[in-house]
Amino acid sequence: MMLLSRFWYAVVAMVAGALAAFAFALVAFYNDRAQQASLVQLAADSQAVEWAIKIESRRRIDALLPLAVDADLWRAAVPLAAPQEEPVAKINSARLEVKKALKKTVAPLKEGNRVAYAPDVVFLVGRAGEVFASERVADGNKKGRLPAWLEAIDQNDEFELGGYFAVVDALSGYERDDLWLIGDHLFLVSARPAMSVPVGGPTAGSTGLPPAGAIVGLKLLDDEFAKTLATSTRTSLVLFARSRRVSAGADVTRDPTELDAVGDELSRLARDPAFAGKSRTEPRLISGGVGATFVRLAGEAPLAGFAVVRHSDFLGSPLDAQGRFTADHKQHLPLLWIGGGALLALLVGIGLSALEHGLPLRAFRKQASSLKTGDIEYLQPEKLRGPYREAASAINDGFERMLIKRGGQGSRPADLSAILGPVPAQGQLAAFNLPSEPPPAPARLSSPAPPVPRASTPPPIPSSPAGPLGRKAPPPRPPAIAALDDDEKTSVGLPNEAVHQGSGARGNGTLGQTGPVNEEGEWLSVYEEFLRIKRQCNEQTEGMTFAKFSNTLRKNRDALVLRHHCKTVKFSVYVKDGRAQLKASPVRDA
Image: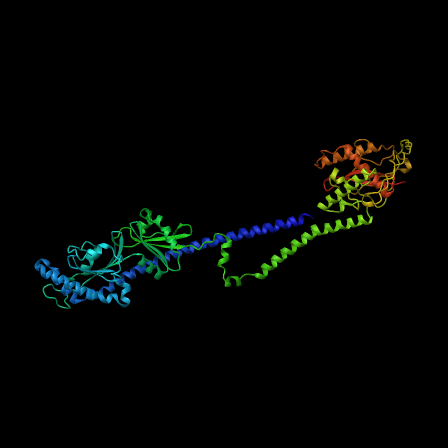
């Protein structure tokens, strides 16, 4: 019975362990799904950014259209197309006129919606690639907005852009966009051809002539541009060139610190076969829960492109999910089943505790009350369980020592289970089984042994003093009977199980046979038979001496003789449930 709560604790522990394992398995499943979703989203984000940059380039090319078709601007630039044929004074004057005309044409780009796609600086380029004039457009007057070398372009008459492919294509009549890396700065380039103007005498609407020049706009790809692009695409991105970070930006809904994880990956891009062959890498985790994909942009800038970064929403443990539950999630919880299961487990635990602790305590209190009123002389440990049995045995031992200390003699039967091993609990005696009626006397043998004369009556035993707790001491033991007449002999009652009785001679197997009876000899035979049966049952026999065995039998014999008013007690050995057991049978007068 005492194992019920321990079994329940084991069941509860296993259920709790299974639930914990299931919760962690769900966390792993969730993280795997979150990672897969993050990688898929990274691929979608990279495509969104790539298309956004293409649209940005297209609109910036369109924003240069008013400059490309302004006839007054290009007529003013005609003298600059052949400077060797014009005097220096006229060329300088023409430069001033072109500068004024360009500034006037650029002015509308600084107003309204055109500002969003206006370049930072505009170049008016001649047919030979020379720069006629330049003008800062968007945020051009903000200090530190553009690199310092742009400030000196107007003072350098020999500055030209004819070496770039985008400019060459624009001078050939094509619209182009490109990426230029000038120093440590990355630029988005927009170039388109200008209207055709005859050098000898410009005629509006002239056809069949090459472009008079080209309009080239540069947009600095700094952190401001990156943040605007990230906000429009709702991503976090890094712009890079030559495996170095140039600028970065993140949407307001993203954590900007996740962009720092890209640094180490940029240094390995040049050796990445996917980046070199397909101009993009597969989405992958780069640090912790941060994933990224790298895309190369077409242009003259070496190893230039962008990286889209996304942090996966991972869970470290099941407790991390607690703060992510919403009211909608909680509405789907089966609260009735959860509460009912918890209540059932609580009730089962309380019930088992009552069975294991409440009932044994009640039995102990009942015996203690009977001991107080004098209904019993000693506690009965065989009727108790667990620690209460040990407590009852300890109390009985205390009573015995107190009686002996005061000059009395203990009369409590010894606990055979503590000395001889566990015995079957049959009837009310537990240690010994007493039949309800005396068994029939066995048939006499043909040649009975001569009777042994009775032993002389021993001197009377002095009366015992008062027992513990003021109770009357138990009655003294009667004198031992040395032998029995033929008329006083009865057969020993045996149980229905396989019984092995000790005998005076080894191997006989009968304790109740006729003839002279030697008690010590009988007990020695029982002792040897008991040891033999225990060995057959693979039980331990170490420490079981005949002196201890006989002393135990003697105490129980005296107690049973006094209690049942029998002549003597016969002991026998039998097997029950694979264990050697002892049985005590009273022998009454025939």
